Image 1 (tube, rainbow, N blue to C red):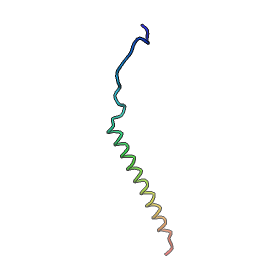
Image 2 (cartoon, one colour):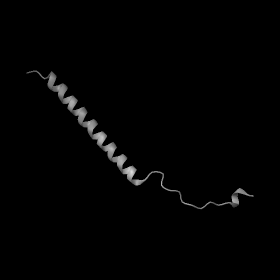
Image 3 (cartoon, rainbow, N blue to C red):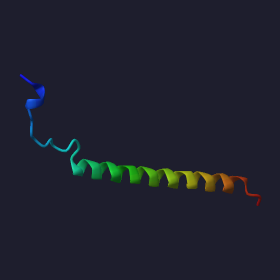
Image 4 (tube, helix red, strand yellow):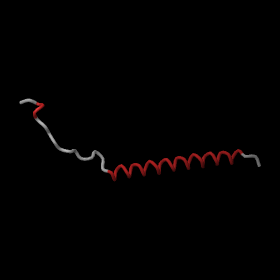
Length: 53
C-alpha cells in the first residue's frame, strides 16, 4: 500500500475553546491591573513615608 494514496480528510476540533481563551485573556488583564495598582500603591506609600513634614 502506498502511503501517498491514503488521504484522511477531517477537520480537527479547535485545540482550545474560545470561551477558555476569553477567560484566560480576562484573567491576564485583571492580573496586570492588580499588579499595576499594587506597584503604584507601594510607590505612593514609600514616598509618603519619606516625605518631610
